[in-house]
Amino acid sequence: MADRNRLPGETAERTPIHEPAEETVEDIDRDRRRRRAQFLRDLTEARELRDRVRPRAARAARMRQVLRMRTFRW
Image 1 (cartoon, one colour):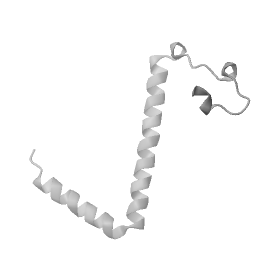
Image 2 (image 1 turned 180 degrees about the vertical axis):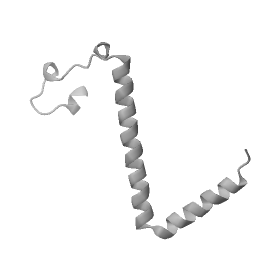
Image 3 (image 1 turned 90 degrees about the horizontal axis):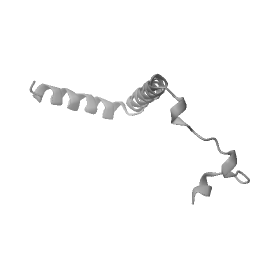
Image 4 (image 1 turned 180 degrees about the horizontal axis):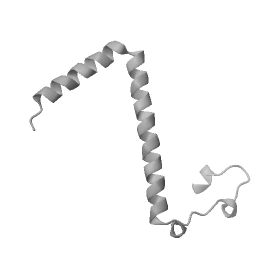
């Protein structure tokens, strides 16, 4: 079952072994923050694209959000 992800002719010995002991906590945090920032940029870009493609739906979504914020109690 694990061989399904390997390329033809690739053996278990050739696959790189990830050793988490080599990475420091700072490296792990830096990578996590970098991936999160990239995800948030992509998410923002997707929302902007959706708003440009479907302006009527975007306007309705904005109006619903405004209504939710008006009825929200702090």
